[in-house]
Image (cartoon, rainbow, N blue to C red; front, top):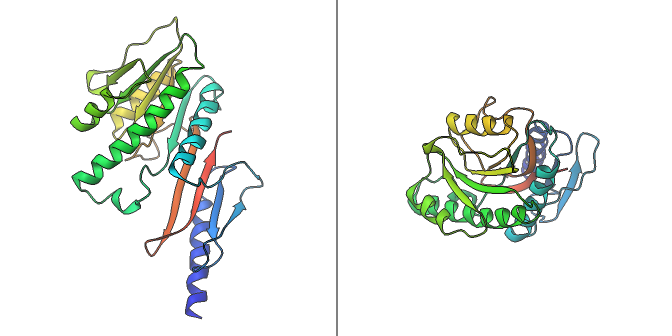
Amino acid sequence: PRRKHNGSKMRSLALCVASLLATNVVAFQTTSPRQQRISPLHLFGGGGSARIPKSPSDRDSIAVDAIKAAVAKPRNTDFPLVECEFPPLTQLNKLGDGSFRSAQQVDQANLAFCKKLLGSIALPLVGSSTTLVLSNAASGSLISGANKIKGFAKMHLLKDGLPSTSSSSKEVFVLLTPSSRVDYQAAQQLAQNGNTVVLLNGFAKDTRSVSGRATMAYYLKPLTYNSQVIGYLTRAYP
């Protein structure tokens, strides 16, 4: 009876969190605490194409494809602000333990994804300018790692102000881990000026950080109970 009660609480948790998200999000939950099989529960009347990634590389491929789709055709073409959120490390306990080593591992994982993303979106956009933008709070190690990435034309630090833009070419800015009001305001200003901005794994957000007109390209959130992953919430644009 106790085990059955815990299973019921797990399912309730998954459904409650899922109800907070937008249309076409797919919630996944385990069928019982001891079973490893995961079954899809399609919410809000849509089947959708989102799926749980089989590996970090599979996740990266799904996320890159979703971001490319959103960059090519955002929900609001006059406000091309795109979001992407997922845990950069599979060891969830390292994401917030506060250790320097874990922070470096998070930075390295985010940079590895940036390399794939920037190389992928730069090729099809002939005549475009692609820039990696680092937040005001970027650490020295993150800046050093970003300088070693190949596949993008420029890098810009927001602590130096807004990056310069050109009216003669399409600008694509990938803002890595925005974490302050100033970061989010800079992203919004760039998007309002017609530049495509991709917010990658932002945190310290509130309801005013990102406009409701932005496009959520990719979202992956593990659902945990008693320190165990019991399912996922995911979305892949379109």
